[in-house]
Length: 367
Image (cartoon, rainbow, N blue to C red; front, side):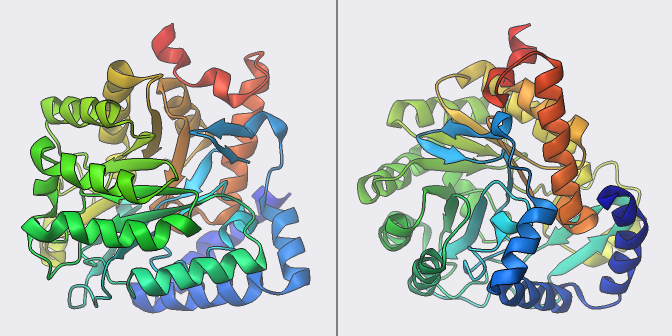
């Protein structure tokens, strides 16, 4: 019943939301989620409507227990302002941020654009966030209210910090956020901070990851771009194994504009930025398969990019993803979509004769 109602009502609601500027409606939605999730009755209702507390979906990954595999990708809750809400909306966990060592306004607007014909977004936000101190305070406050699922802290480089100061800048964020997060993700793959992607080169990445590992006692992961060459993906994967990282998040947004339905002149007018959503699905799956063939079983893999349906989510799990993430798909599909995906995954686990979704991870690659 909920699915049928959602298919009728959510497209109407989405059209109404799209009448407002992207950042304006994002602020309204965030405020609504924060307010609603802090009301006792509302918390209970949200959890009953959207969560799927099925034991076949519950698994332990890098020592952390996840009640369900699909989480919120970084970028939606940049300041951890609603860290205690995401589990109530059906997410198995959330990755907050990207948070930088110092507060920064990000790039000048307009910097967020919709491509509804492609179920996609283009953003050049530029890590707008209140800084690591404020985000850490928000996480601490959320813990006091009760967080219904794991929270990862995604950290990036402050724009004004030169590349040769990146190590210390990441170290500061890790030191402040690590004690309040269940895991930390090192983001060196956003296309919207000048020079940041250069840090994916192994020689530059090694001291950053080593510094973060020194600062925290929680699992550390690294997030990579879909635009990396295959050899560079292999190099980062090998480095992650060498340093003892917990896993890799693949992938961030892409600078590619290939295969879009939206007219080229409209896309060009939007300008630079990272593309997310459905057009990223094929490349994200390719990167996942490559990573699993290289380091499957040695590292946890979190797949993100273009996941919109139970079939796509199951394909990622079978290709080697321990966990999944969504952002743009959540915007275009709403929280009922999360429930549909989790129910679909649980049904597929049982249909395959397995007791837990962890048994399905990499099954396609294993034959």
